[in-house]
Length: 247
Image (cartoon, rainbow, N blue to C red; front, side, top):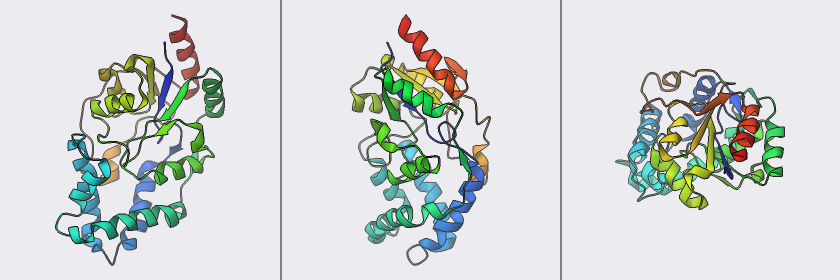
């Protein structure tokens, strides 16, 4: 019996060109930190901080772990740097040009899942403060209050594609993995949920994305691709859930 739907965000519920957006993001955020971190260092520090999150063992929040690596050698700036990140997301993030769209049937999907009494969670990679996924949802008019929980840098101690991310999430929800369905567009980050005992659905609207293009070939990703239990357009999740809950 499935009672909880875990929904990825980027290119699952919000369709956009991640490569183009990342380049614009860096153009906006790098000078925003100019008085704290030299522009020549900022990009490398950001990539190192995010990449190192894969090694967090859950003993620290992702925020603390990220800052430990981003602020190496400039730890006296730690508080100011985190406040600057928050200020950026509050005041500048929404100024970055982006063209985003909903997949067909998203509103109907969420409405029906709610009508069935299922719990819906935004299971996005928790490498940003909560305000960032909330603003990405706003791009396409999704109300964050529709969801029981959104994973973010402060409430998780693991990131995708670690199996432990899904185990920690199930623990936070108090839900056995076999009662969850993970829905996402990524064979590595999202479908790895299957190794934690969660049923998986690969959404197909976004097609295949070259994530190495986001970081000039410096991979932020690692892990194996995993075959999904189900796949198709996002709207087909309703058919899958109905079928699983008839068994």
